[in-house]
Length: 338
Image 1 (cartoon, helix red, strand yellow):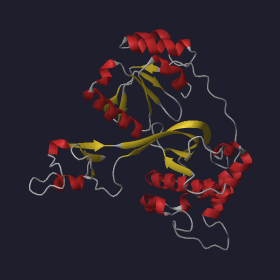
Image 2 (tube, one colour):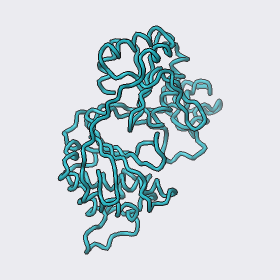
Image 3 (tube, rainbow, N blue to C red):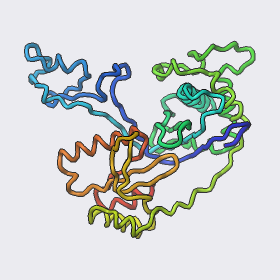
Image 4 (cartoon, helix red, strand yellow):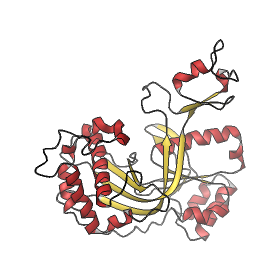
């Protein structure tokens, strides 16, 4: 997408894999641990401030009188599904100060989202959106819009039509009090961007930050970009890097079925200076990097499963797509989505 001073990438993907992670209560204190706690004795979910009373020796709220050791902590909940998705990726405009990047990101997300709802006469329950955690270039925002029902109705795919895209752009102007007779608000209000569903973001909304970007979007031209011919890594080098016969078998199936080879094997992923995980295969894709774990029999042990779950949940929070392969027969179906 190219407009007056604005360049952005708009990508449609049918049946994209969407993973939503619930890391705890929104109003939790900063020093509270992430996730939830579960009493393994009575199967009750607990917040961090409920654990002490739940395990009190003199006045326990647990009918099974659970001890501290019976509380499993730092549990993160997630849902996963295949959804029609449009991804909007844009650099931070030069006139926006870096310290206001999150305000710009959240405001742009909500404004385009509201424009889509109005343009296609949709309810909030039919389309959802989020700002994707950055894994690449600093100062670049990636916003994901997806149809909440699996399979979808094809609404988002129509955004690839330039006329419908511009229609959404025009509606964003209306959303932001674009009518000359509408005095509007200072930053945001319940007549434009604020709603019950986005209360946690209210203090970040500032419509003035996105007005210039959206004006450019209204006259933008959509230019189709051919998919890159991504060849992947060298087969022999990947094979040599494999740590197990099962990994080698999976790699052979990937090649023999005609799928793109991984870019790397045994690639270490860092969060800052801290190593997080070492997937067996790694695809460095624009928009979403893919970490593939080939799980042999050793991964069936409970302590290994717990360690795998912890590391892979963290990767998902960092914005990586995580894939687990437990049998080579899974390769064709999984690799069709990569």
